[in-house]
Image (cartoon, rainbow, N blue to C red; front, side):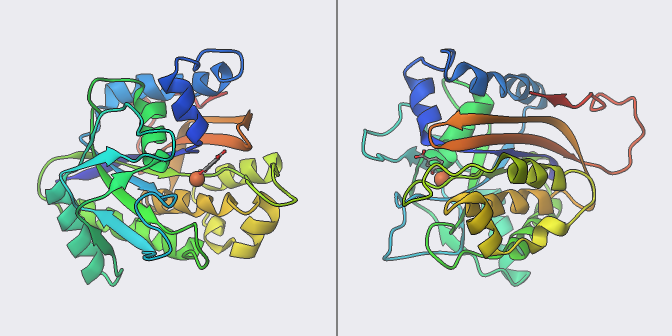
Length: 295
Ligand code: DHB
Ligand code: FE
C-alpha cells in the first residue's frame, strides 16, 4: 500500500533557483537561507521518497488568463522546466508517476473534488525551486513528482478550508493505491510577501511564525483564515500559504515537527520551511524521534 510518510512546507522564491544555478548558494546573502535546508537535504537522502506530491502554483508559465484551473493534477510522464524570461533552468527533467497520479485523480473526482487533469505542461520556479532546496543539484531528481497546481494567482483562489479538505482526500487516495510506495507531500509558496504596489516588501514575521506553529500538533484553526486576513497581514502574495494547508490536511489529525527554518530577507520575501510527520501516537525511541532542529 502507498503511504504518505511526511509533509514538507517551503517557500519557492525564484531567486533561490538563480542562486543555486550560479553557485551563489553559500555566499553571505544566500548562505543562511540554504543552510536552513541542509538538515532536510540529509534527511531526504535517508528517507528516499518514491514519489513527491508537489503542491505548488504556476506563475503564468503553463496557464495564463485564458485558462485558470482551481486545482489541477499532473498525470504526465515528464515535465520540462519553463522559460520564465531568462531561459529554462538547467535542472533535470521532472519525471511524473502517471499510474499513481491517475489513481489520485480518479479518487479525488469520485470524492467530489473536480480536478483538472494535465498531461503536458512546463513547470516553473514554484515547482523546481523546492526540488532544488530539498534535493540539491543531482544529475536526476531522486523521486518521481506529481505536480498538484492550485490557483493562487487570480482571484478567487480556493479557501484554506477547501485546501485542507483536498489534502485529506489526497491521503485517502494514496492509501488506496495498492503498490508499496513511500510518498511525501510538499506544500510550497509563501511566506508573507507582496511584490508590487505601495506595500511592496511587506513582511510579517510574527504572523508567519504563528502560521507555522499552527500546522504542528492537532489544531485546525488555520483552515478558517480568510482571504482578507492573508491579504492584510501577509501581502498580496501571502495567499500562496493556502498550499501548505493541502500538505497539512494530508497528514491526518496530528503532526509532529522535525525541522523548521525562517529567514528574512530573501529577495522581497520571508522564506519559511517546515518538515512534519503524521503523528500516529507512536512511542518515543524510534528513528524518527529526533529533537526539533530549528534554525
Ligand atoms: C518572488 C516570486 C514568487 O513567486 C514568490 O512566491 C516569492 C518571491 C519574487 O519574485 O521575489
Ligand atoms: Fe510564488
